[in-house]
Image 1 (cartoon, rainbow, N blue to C red):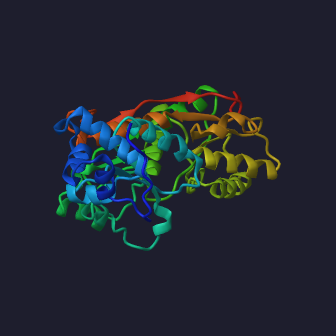
Image 2: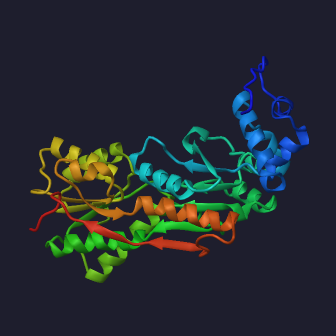
Image 3: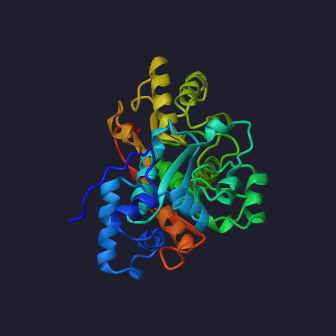
Length: 345
């Protein structure tokens, strides 16, 4: 057995490991970087020496030499939004059996500042990037192409409409059509829509799907029934005040997100209106709270964990071309989760 030897130093070095193992530093380096090049006896001696000395491999230095970080950066537009939790879980699961670790950054902290994301690649701090934020500046996206790292980037959930990057997304337009059709089948003809933030790709896709289905069903249209929101509780609450005061008040509302729907229901109750007795409400996302809200929310279910796993697979296919999915755009199916916030009239 190898004699454990305490090394009285603040930081154990490879020389310490070599001394305890009785081999050269070059042999220790070979045993760590390419174990097949040394004998089983030597590998065992080095392993036991590492354990005895408490040596920790300096991965940062090794990665700098290899120009590889074994890390992937995930950009999230708002970590406080519970919608993203299952996507992050799916991404983590997708990388769990790989050499890559996950870093997460909230892009809302970067408001008003240029994101120096290219530096993360150039400094070998990350190997790839998954962005859940579709509003990254075009100038920043252009830099990815200029520096030859555009093939290491995937967009998930949201995407950049003006940039050619692989993306994994839900079929948002289909979800909006399902919501409107559900309300139509319940007898509703006056259907309002509370949107997401102006300029957002999800807002656009869901609004377009909603308008297409309205036209297909020949539903009446009042411009006042399109109320601007921003995916937040507050915007739903504010929309409720406007809807409650309308002379030609809708009997149902399709909200661009569950958070908007929760705020809307709260605001309608404050105005003395009941959901679904007075107004039916449909959300979009099917976050965990939807099933336990009051009333439980009818909503469009997105496979959020599936979004995360598929985006991880897509990025792995770019980092390791022999693995995973290689389509440029991957669309996941959605479905209507019917609960008690809608009813027939």
